[in-house]
Structure formats: structure tokens, C-alpha cells
Length: 541
Image 1 (cartoon, rainbow, N blue to C red):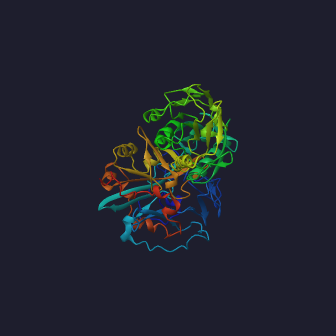
Image 2 (cartoon, rainbow, N blue to C red):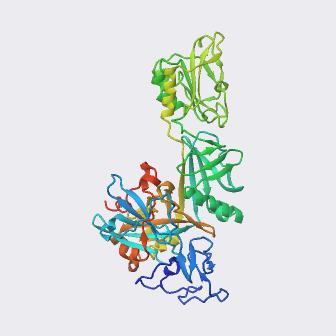
């Protein structure tokens, strides 16, 4: 029995048997825990070492005792390339043992495992099992060919204690002050971080929330991260701010209201973009924005178009001509401010410059709020219906706003245990990645590797198959990771060459069937379809 048949329940293969390690690491067979019932099986897939009774699963619900044999409950997922499509889609396959597909799903069909198409099948780390207790080679080290080049992919599931989730929320609404605590079921699980252009940002999870606080804080942090990474909805609150419902690839719900549009730009940018289209239709345009409110006649765009000054006097701190900071406080009103009446940011009009009949358009950065005013004889703005030709420009502002979405990025540090599953000299893998000799993917999705020391990967969860993430109660996130490289490069970095298997051998470790899962185009946004993991430069460049 190999190290991996202990934890994945797959049929044995003709692979070298690694020596059993004693608690003292002396290479001797381990001493059996005499207090454990003979009817139980000890799982060594993570540090918890669950003792599992017949017919039951461990604390992670990923391994179970089936007739005295420890079996992997979740399926191993394969990706199959659809060559007939212009952009190759990745279709997930699953190992026997997965739950039956829903009645609404297409009926499952057997796959004959045609190995003539081996270069169109990619084994992912989803369901592959771990390398714990670290010295074990990865459960799948699969040889293949890509464009005639001998390749190898090292496949495993990583136990990530150092990991977090970065959430980008497309909205101008005020969610909470920077550094404000984010709570899930009452527990602090992260904080608000620096806003980006048109988006609010959250940093959730991390080792300090997972392990540095109370047990409940760790459990809630783990639960939130798993839900978000598996593209499920989660409700959070921000101290001194808003309540949120976050789901990857879906519109955020802020204080019970679903967001619709991401702003086309700040107030200054919006004024500049649409200045020519508004020329002659309005005498003054104010685009209300929490960050930079734009005033057209003062803005360089208005000056270049020879628009005369309107005499408007704005609240806030003037930055450069036509650009104002701090016209109001952050909030959920116009342009991410706390105002419901746009006239509240106008102090008055300069006599002798402003004239009765002046036409004023005020709009938000998304065009969702817009009002039209005409100055009366006392230079007081009087609201009137927006003229159709002006409404067309306001509608165009809205047309140029992208749909508001939540983006969830998983960020994890691949430590020694992952690297030891690839090579006995882990630093060589790190160096090979930095030298662009290794392509890193997570569930077949492209992963960005941060510069600097270590292997810190970041991946968009919407580009991964559904339910790619699991947990163990240490607490830690379980995430798939794959390292693909030339076979020669793998040998050069001291890889576990004696454990390299063909795809045929990998498939023989389980009965494979199509699980009726939807195609990539159905479970992934069309623009986010992934490139084939084995066909990307610099691997073959």
C-alpha cells in the first residue's frame, strides 16, 4: 500500500512504496494508536488525523470509512478540451463516487477514455488529495505531450493556512471607512481596504483571523472563505457602514438594494468624455462624485470647447480647474455621496456672470440620477423636465457603465508541503517558477504568481470549476494547484521522476465518467474562458 492509497481510496498502482515514518522521523513503522477502535480508520490527509468509524466521514467531509477502507468522497475533476469551439472550453469530468447530477442536468454518459486524445485531457487538483505529512510526492504526477513536447503536470490539493480572499465590489456606494472591520455572523473576518477606480475593496480571511483569534472567529472566517471561493452568496456587515450580500460574478446587494452599474469614470472623467456631446445642449454640467466632482465650463474640456463661464459656485475643495474634492460626505446617494438633493453642493451663482435662463444639467457618474434646471430671474435653479436630446447623452453615460459585479480572488501561499510534493529540493521549484519554466494553475485556471520570495498565487474563482474549494478544521482552506512543465525541466529540478505516471495510469486509479456538468461557457463568463493549461507560453515558447 502506498502513502496515497491510505488517503485517497484509489486502487493501488505499481509505484514505489515509501518508508513509513515514525513520530520521531526515524523511518520505522509507526506505532498503532492502541486507544483507537479496530473498527475505525485513521485519516492522515491533514494534521487533524480523524479516527473515522465505519460508514462515517471525517471532520472535513472529504474522506470516509467504507468497509474499513479510507476512501475519498469528492470526485477528482478532469478538464477536457473542446476542439470544435473557436475558444477551447474546459469541460469538467468527475471520478466515480460523486453525487448524482440534478434531475435538470443532462444525463450522464460514459467516457471511453480514448487515450488518442490524451493531449486534450488535464487532471486538476480538485479532489486529488494532499501531500500531508508533507514528504509524500503529489498524488498525481502525470506525463503528457503538448505540441509534440514531453510535459508533466504535478497535481495536488494544498492545505492553505496562509490564505485570504480579496473582494472587488463595483459600486460608488459608501460601504465603510477604510480599515473598518468586516463581520460575518458577528465575527470579525476582515477589513475594508483601499478603494479602486469605481470599486470598493475588501480583504477577508488571512492567517490571523483563521488562527489568531477565538475558535469561533476561525470557524466563521473559514466558512465565509469557502462560501465565497465556491461562488456562493455570503452576507456581511461593515462596522459603521453597510450590509452586503457578496457572490462572485453576481451584482452586489448593498443595504438590500442590488447594484446595477459601475461608474463610467469619476466626475471629472465623465465631464471630459461627454463634453462635446453636451456642447450646445447645456450651459453648465455638474457630474456629482464622492471623489472628484466635475464642472464642465471650468474644466479643461469646456475651456477647449470655448464654453463661457457659468458663474456657478461649488462647495468642496477645489483641486484643479473644474475638479472638486469633498463636495459632500461618502454615502449611498448621488455619485457615492450622502446627498439626495444635488443642489446641496452648489453654494450660489456669481452675479453678472450667471444669467437667467441658464441651463444646468446635474447627473451622477452612472447616469442613474439626473436632473435638469433652468435659472429664474433671481438666479435660482428651477427643475424642469430633461429635454430628449439631453436625456440621450445621460442614457449614453449609463450605456458606458459596465454591470456592477463582485469579483472574488483567492490568494494563498504555497509553502513547503506543496513544494515537497513536487521535488525533494523545494527551492528549485520556486526558482523554476520565477524563471517562467513552470505554469501554475488552480483547477485549470490561470494563476498569477506574485513577485518576490515564495509561491504566492492569486486566482479568479469564477474561472475555476464549481466547488473547487474545501476545508479542514485546523482551520485551513483546501485548494487545487497544478504545476505544469517540460519533463526535462522537471527532472532537472529534482522531481519525483519515479512517480511520473501516464494518463492511462492516472485514469486506471478510478472509474471515470462524464458527470453531466455544464460546459465552461455555461459555468464561466464567456470572456473568462481559460486557455489550455498545457499550451501556453512560456512553456512551449
